[in-house]
Figure (cartoon, rainbow, N blue to C red):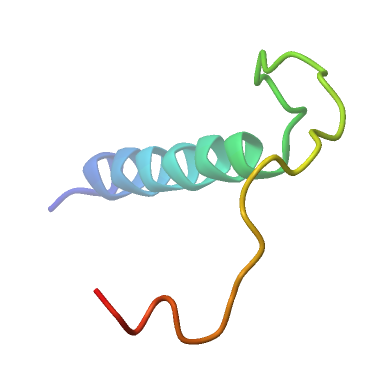
Length: 53
């Protein structure tokens, strides 16, 4: 391997790691709606009812 190929491989690895770090630690790009807390509308847990089926 020549020095230029080693240098290019090192640059590629560095860019790959940098892009991964920027994706992890960058600003959040999720587009979830802000809906707030939802009330619980289910049945309360009763001990023993889950054992019957």
